[in-house]
Amino acid sequence: MNARLTTILLRSPVLVTMVLFMLAPMVLAVVYSFMTNGAYGGVRMPFTALAYRQLLFQEDFDGNLVFSTGYLAILWRSVLLAALTVVASLAIGLPLAWYMACSPPAKRARLLLLITLPFWINTLIRTYCWVLILRDEGLLNSGLRRLGLVGGHFLYNDFAILLGMIYTYLPFMVLPIYAVLERVNGDVIEASHDLYADRLSTFRRIVWPLAMPGAIAGSLLVFAPALGSFLAPDLLGGGRRLMIGSLIQLQFTSSRNWPFGAALATVVSVAILAVLFVVVRKSFNKVPAR
Image (cartoon, rainbow, N blue to C red; front, side, top):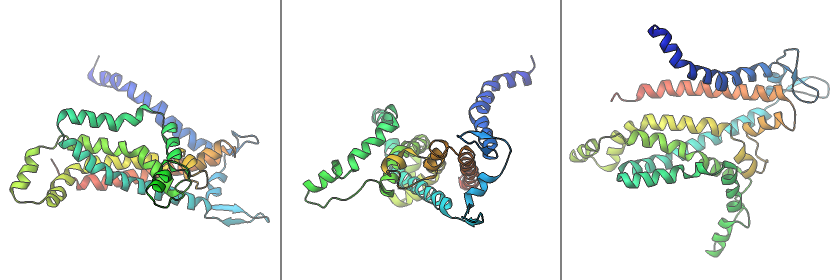
C-alpha cells in the first residue's frame, strides 16, 4: 500500500463526517431555498427564486412588488445582539481566563470545572431559570425590593435576550483564551515588570497580543451560534423580539414555508462564512510571530 492511499484511508472518516454532517445539510438547504413551497408544507417543483425575492419585496393588494425592510430589520437586530454578546463575553472572559491561567494548577482544575459545569445541564432548563430570576416576581425584583430599591421589568426585552446569550456562550470565549494564555511563559511577564512596565502596559503589549488568537477564536465561536440563537429570544424575549433564528424556526413550523426558511438559513450561513473569512484573514495577519 503506497503512502498516498494510506493517507486517504486515514483521512476518510473525517471527510465522510464532514460531508454527511456539514456539507450535505448546507447543500440541501440551498436546494430547498430554490424550490416552490408545498400547499401543506414541504417543497415541490419547479425551481424558483421567489423565496429570495420575499426577503426584500412584498406584494401589495394590486400584485405590485413593494420594497420591505421588515426582514432586514430582524437581521440587523440579530447581528447587533450577536456582536454585543461577543463584546460582553470578551470583556468578561479575558480577565477571567487570565486569572485562571495565573492560578495554581489545583485551583485551575476547579475553575475549569466551574466553567464547564453549565454544559452538564440542558440549555432549555438553564435558560428557563433566567425567566424565574428576571420575571416581575422573580429573584432579582424581590432582592431589589428588600434592599429598598425600585424593581423593574427585566423580562421580555432585548436586555433579557442579551443576558441569556452572554450566559450561554461565555464558556466558548473563556476556554480558547485560557488555552492560549496557559502556555504563556511567566518569565515574559516578569521581564516586563523588571523593565518598569506598569500593569496596563504589560497587558497592552504582552498579554493582549499573546491572547489575541484565543480571543479571535472565541469571538467566532460566540458570534456564529449567537446570530442563529432562538431559545433565548423565545423564552427571554417572549416571542416579541424576533431574531433571525426564531424567524427561520417559524418558517419550518407554524408558517410551513420551507423554501423561505431555507433561503433565510442560506443567507445567514453565507454572511457568517464571509465574516469569518474576512476576520480570520485580517486578524491573524496582525498576530505577532511566536
